[in-house]
Amino acid sequence: MPAALSVYRAHLNDRGIRLASKDATRQSGSTEKNGWFNRFLATVEWLGNLLPHPITLFAMLAIFIVLLSGLLGYFDYGVLDPRPLGAAGRDPDGVIEVISLMNAEGLQRIVTQLVTNFTGFAPLGTVLVALLGVSVAEHSGLLSTAMRALVMNASKRAVTVTIVFAGIISNTASELGYVVLIPLAAMIFHSLGRHPLAGLAAAFAGVSGGYSANLLLGTVDPLLSGITEAASHMLDPDYVVGPEVNWYFMVISTFAVAFMGAFVTEKIVEPRLGKYDPSEASIELGEQKMEAPTDQERKAMRWAGLSFVLVCAVLALTIVPENGILRHPETGEVAGSPFLKGIVAFIFITFAIPGFVYGRVAGTMRNDRDIIDAMAKSMGSMGLYITLVFFAAQFVAFFKWTNLGTVLAVKGATLLQTLGLDGPEVFILFIIMCGIVNLSLGSASAQWAVTAPIFVPMLMLIGFAPEVIQAAYRIGDSVTNVISPMMSYFGLILAIAARYKKDLGMGTLIATMLPYSMVFIVGWTILFYTWVFLFGMPVGPGAATYYNP
Image (cartoon, rainbow, N blue to C red; front, side, top):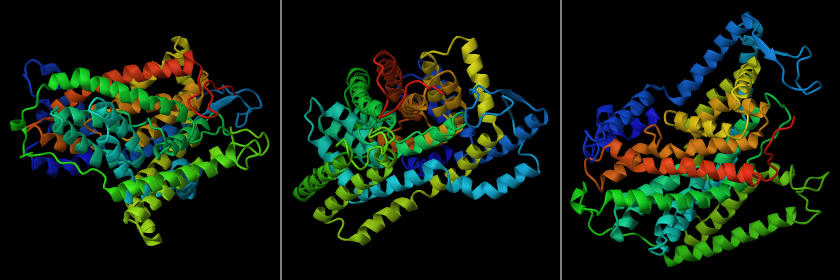
């Protein structure tokens, strides 16, 4: 994002790195040889810089929706309602018309529901609650110590795949992977006599390219599922999309992305970089020292692990037995149970309790005041997100009120069926489209808030469930993060890389990361198609593959 890049601009200039478009064309090799690629990268950066801040973008889109609804409403523009007779919300006349907000009734609705649009936006509360628990584990030092222990205890043969794997896991704690793991990975590779930029690339691929994958549910799961559920309500007001609906697929994706990232690092990136010459560094590197977890930290880790097992055991007692109190009260099944509906509360608990236990034993947290301070710090860092949510919530609400999302979905579904693209192959185009949009709109929530109201009902109309649509979106949103100059941490990664290679340009970093994007989008898409359509496996607990109204 342009705003994020500007934050790092002064930091990068201290190292003599300029982020202007003309410098994005500089490569370590011959400029003439890679001229077309450099011009492409410069064009991507230039186009991205033309975009306004995501908050401004949502404000502009909300105003555009109001104006467009007035124009189409004046001409009574509409489509035939595809929902069956008797379906909830179906128009008695069988026609869905665009409802204008450019009238007295529309203005009244906007001003009276402005606040409730914001407070009722599904992802807001769930993300903040989940983050409260994660913040305790992060500020106590549990997540940082676990990451260092995982990476530094890996054997030389397994270090590459371990670094990529650790990068994927670090996504649970937002910026931790960018700030801690990526610099650490570069140091580890340098200490092993390998090219430090290869280590940086491997970690960056895991943290950013594998953003959506994880073994645990994190803050991104309730964030995306809330947007998906709101979009699905345009066709089915009773449809429920829980945070856990992509969990199965994201677990298997974690291992797939880890091995793909290790393969690209060792077979493509590292051979291309060649043997590292320390004279290329912009600073005196000296001996790269890494601090292994201390005995006290290891002891704290053991106690935190024990507390995690105990928490999981207690939760298991509520869901594993047939008469478990958190099973569905009527059917006795796990699907639709209070356990799954309340998964955000369990994310909070499973991070907060081990986090405090670790902090107590390690000496980083002593009482409730420290827990409150950790939570407050994380909430304080969410100011930009909360501001974005306010404007995103208005855009989503206006889109729903005007029926524009449903109208566009029906038109789009009709076009796909006309072109014969109503089978699983449509997801290939959908994933590629999401990856391209991500080059200029790097925020996962911002992009999904814009695209979900159109594509979720559109793909539902040709027979696919919202859970599967969301899983496909997560692939496209992740794979191009590592080559997007608009990604919020891209400037920071560039600054870290410049320590090991002076005068390193943005084009060099993007060229280094491009093989990861190419392999990830192909490999991850094949995994998606195989898992969902060949094996017929659900993408998450209780998740449907096909939508049957």
